[in-house]
Structures are given as C-alpha cells and as structure tokens.
Length: 189
Image (cartoon, rainbow, N blue to C red; front, side):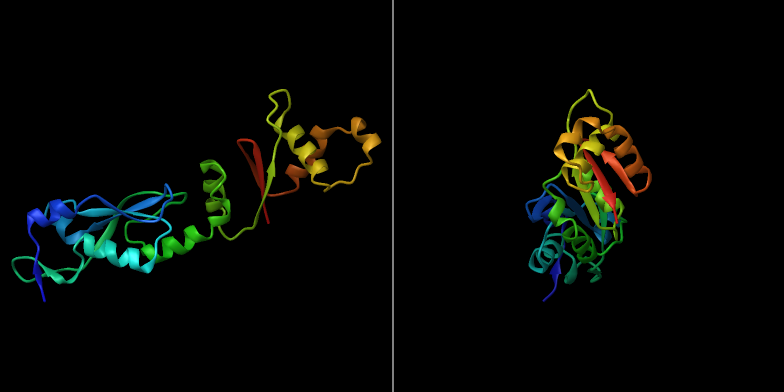
C-alpha cells in the first residue's frame, strides 16, 4: 500500500534520534525530499542494529511504499552530515560505517583524539602506551619510562637511576611507527 508523502509528514519526521548510545552519528537524509527543497533526515547514532537502520529508513520515508503526488517513490538516501572518528562520504553504506565503527569498540573509552588516530590507521594493530603527565619531561622521556615500566626493556631496579630515559624513548620512537597523542604514545603494528 502506497503512502502519499506530504510536507507536513516531512516536517514531522525530520531530526529524530535513532540507534546506539555513543556520541558518534550520521545524519541520514532522504535524497528526493532534499531535491524538492526539504531536509528530511534522522540522527543515526552508532552502534546501530539492522532494526534501527530499518526504522531510520521509515522515519525518513525511504522505501517503495512512500510516493510523491506523481506516484514516484522516495527510495534514495545520502549522508548529509556526520560526527564520526573517521571521514564519511555522502553515499557510504550505513552498514559498512557500522562495521568500521565496531572495529573501534575496544578503544571508545579513550579520548576522541586517540580514537581518531586509531581510525586513521585502520588495518594496523595499535599498542597504546599511557604516558606520565609530568610537564617537566619531554614526550620521549615519558615514552622511555613507559617502555621500562612495561618491561619492554628489562632493567634491574638498582640500575634504574642510571638510565637515559629520553634517549630510550627517542630511539624507540625513531624505530617504530607511532605518534604521540595527549598523554599517550600509539604504536601501529
């Protein structure tokens, strides 16, 4: 059964929130309504289920059952806005974005900067070193202490005061692929 889409329906359905409980979302928009001069979309928060996506399509009146006054269906959508830890194109498939986001699930408790850096380096396995927050040390020195604390270099306790932690951190950083972000050093394998 076809439903005639009206301006009132579009205004009533626009701007709802559907999906998960994260701060990350895409604004899924009805393409035909947009071409007609109406912004009709939903904030689809991640992570979302297939049922949430189906509800989002119905909310923005996308599907063969929704038609305009000429009988043409509203069946296309695009992403007109987003807040994600990685870049999104307007015609990306929401399911693919959800899969990519699911790959970041283990890192969502870190700061946004860390999540974005990990997302930029998709395909690599990150190792995250939490660094001392002292303003008296350089990042390389902080990394040197983290390396020794993580036992990547075994140092007898009585020799700890004789180490050049800054040199250890600098040499490690120069021989690895990684980046400092806030109080973290993220190495990519």
